[in-house]
Amino acid sequence: MSTEGEMWEDRAYRVCGCVQGVGFRWWARGVAEELALGGTVRNLADGSVEVRATGDAASLDRLEGMLREGPRFSRVDRLEVIEVEVIARPDEFRIEP
Image (tube, rainbow, N blue to C red; front, side, top):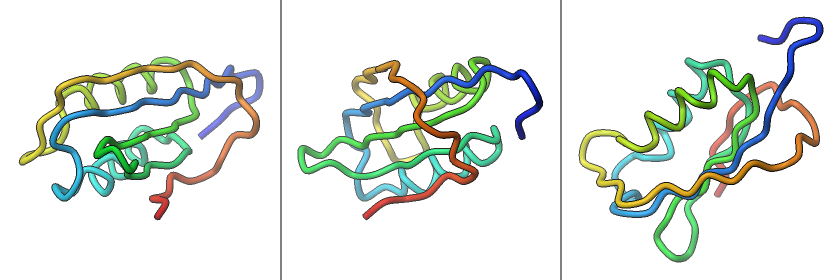
């Protein structure tokens, strides 16, 4: 995971399209875990999915590229990327209700 002196970023993504009811949150968690990112993923009331991830810039860029594609059976119409201030580095990636 992290090493001494490594710089972390915290980014929030809003994924719009056919992204609920297709396993998107479980897929996103798996991708984030493979990239050693911490954070959360949750469905929003408007039908989009919010992903918040913390890690190194290169891993976040890879996550962003994968979120633009989405898992099988999903359709990503739009991805909004929001850089936010790092509050604390989470050690895991979890699905929120």
